[in-house]
Image (cartoon, rainbow, N blue to C red):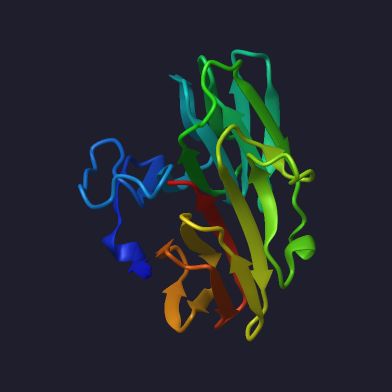
Length: 233
């Protein structure tokens, strides 16, 4: 089963400095049919104006993954972490027993991010933060693991949950496959471009909710940059 969730069907709010679209119920947007997808709880599509951002605020017991689509985001938290993550790269924050952080666009241009929240399978742990570059060339024509709760995904950023966040860049006409284990929930969003998943057209910033599929074949209609979450029930 693959359910298309078009971008124009998403919830959201425009706060001036922040134009936020929500794939799942979040803040003042509530849709009982879109509260989660397995352990995937939030997928926000955020456009942040220059020299603005999210002031310090707390979280706990959540794995928060930020994929930068355009521009850059600067992270600061009460653990003393400070870092700048650029387009195509990823940062992860394991909120654990509690962390307060700020995310600012300190650039002179607009920043666009996907912010993904996944419920943890490990709680009561110390909070942590990390980031690393993922060159788009390394993902050319294939899915590459960006963040993972599995120990054998050595090159991925660690998260404390039974899930993976993967990415791919496909040129028009290229096809990549992704294999799911049994009882998994997949959610795929093209950051740019458009693709067909087993014949279903998915355009930029649409969501594709995937269930009961052992494998998907993703073919780029045009040059595309993809992000996919593979989550437990």
